[in-house]
Amino acid sequence: MKILLVSLEYPPQIGGVANYYYNLKTHWPEPENFIVLDNSEGKLLAKRRFLPWLKSIKSIYRSYRKNDSDLVLIGQVLPLGTSAALLSIFSPFRFAVFLHGLDYSLANATPLKKVLCRFILTRASVIVCANSEVRRLLINSQKNLIKKIELLNPGAKVEEAKFFVKEELKEKYQLDNKKIIFSLGRLVRRKGFDRVIQSLDKVELDNFIYVICGQGKEKKYLRELADRSIHRKKIIFIDNINNDEKWAWLSLCDIFIMPARNIAGDFEGFGIVYLEANLMSKPVIAGASGGVADAVKDGVNGLLINPEDNNAISGAINTLLKNPKLAHEMGECGRKRAEADFNWINLAQSLATRLNEKL
Image (cartoon, rainbow, N blue to C red; front, side):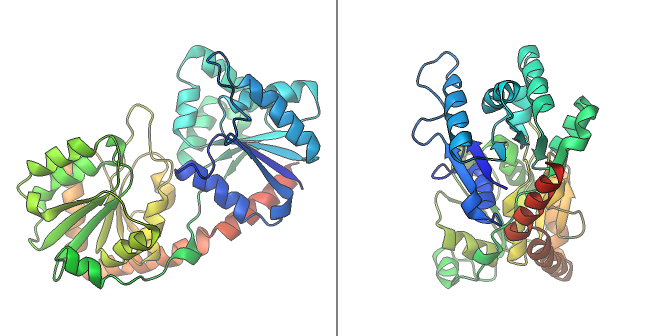
């Protein structure tokens, strides 16, 4: 089967959605039959302000015909899904739409967009949901689409997970004999790092360090919040780390924490970083919101807590810090689960098989 993926988000762009499509392409069972059309050269969106996506109709159809594609995978329901739906009316053009979370929320933000979204999903041959939460929202809205839906969680780069030298980090940040609580991600409100800072005053062990790594629009707010904390000297901010340093920190920490929450329809679609921490045999603390429950099974590879409850956050931290045996068991269970269930090779093969069966 020949596949054409059309997406506005694809490397060198940075982000979870771009990585999702890159890994799907990279691990596809027949990569030579998987072509990508992105907007890196302005092929999909015109520079004009009015309906810039109209340009994508011609580009998609040209690539579809040139590559003799059997199926077109549409990365964004809006605006690209509109082009695909229109093409399907006037030609034997079959397409699948991916939904991640916020994209689906935004596609239902106004009555006009909601009608358009319904039209696109009705015309689609397959709808691929990246998490169980967006699948649930879709089924609640349009039960008639249930037979079209496939679930494809993001995978972890199992082959990348290696133990890197971490002694230099321990020396640089004076981490000897410290319990390390680690967060990694964009510094935006829905990640819940502010809640972690606020919950630290109820952590019962004294020898902890909280490390927050990332950049984003909430950086100033988080630093101000940390400065007001009674544990301000135990909070470390790191702006940038490379891939090796990421794995080193995940290997070095005792707990990974990201209590993500839903803010006006903007929720964590999955949370690959939870699996990456698990690959280093670390337990995780996650917010019970969005698609996080696909990545974190409460009591199995970590703890799912109410992300709006600071007491629940501090309680989860205390549970894992005071019970190293439990933390170790969750970390090991998480590692085995990530390697077995979230390997991109297996995920891509599974989707390819299911698409073949549906078409």
